[in-house]
Image 1: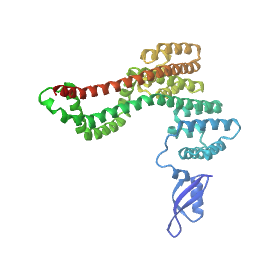
Image 2 (image 1 turned 180 degrees about the horizontal axis):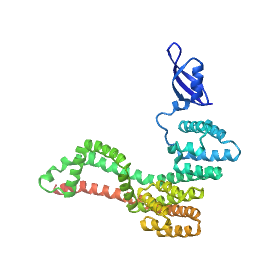
Image 3 (image 1 turned 90 degrees about the vertical axis):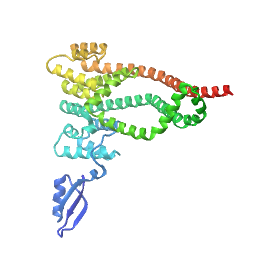
Image 4 (image 1 turned 120 degrees about the vertical axis):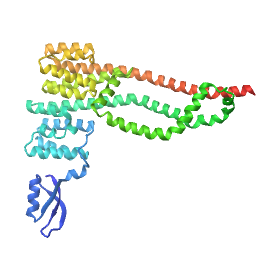
Length: 400
């Protein structure tokens, strides 16, 4: 039975606090009134442990939740009891609170998809729609298993992309720090040595540029760092707007080398989400709306939404996708054939798997080229710095 924390006043008007067990808020208030207390506030006990609004739960924990719920239901455990078991065993306070709300609202008469719809940040639109389709179609356990597999697959994909890009990102950061450190702390120490050559107008131009860059870096670093922080904060706000996100996503898919990979993964996510939703009985217009958000790219998402408008007017999916020039021709042709043969859900899942495998091969090859390329760039910059500093020293030695 849920626990409520209360603040109340007794018959003498003194404020008291405590806990009471009750099935719902009404019973908790009635219990306090029967004990001679006048309740001021009633808060579910678990809500005390969750600060602020409900937050997103990790993909692995949600995948485990869906999988375990499917196993319990498949084993004949009633839904309410299954929710209570999972609530008791989870260590995530945020998920524990959400499951407590799910349990109480189902107990009061709401359906599982209705309650999940109250927490979209936790369950996601895709999970909610698949549970709704499974509940209405009588295959809830199968829908939960599909959600669990999809959640695990997407988390694995995200981890692999992050792991593949970790080395280039670290190397870029190291390269930047080395260059900034040399310009700020090493280069200015050579300037007094070159005053004589500068007076005779014999200082090489490359050295002049290097000394200027060093002085500029050292002088303006106190301004540059706060300015950089302000730009980063501004960018984080700007990129949340539709206009900002659209521009950033356009740059992503147009970036040489990595752009085609990012676009390929976005299309693969669209195909996998749409195929999974259609396979679980979600109507195609609603499935397209969810799949458009799941791409993670505003440009491709807008293309999908335009396609959904055509479908609502009686057209097929392949035609508007082909007209957008965002989807590869081979993918559009496979979707067109699948629509004619009424196997769109299966073909979309096959397309997603094929695209993911191809994108991984391309990404691995790109990263292999990036690593030595960045080392060559680092070596080239260091060589330029050394030459710029050694040329005037060699001129001075020849003068003597």
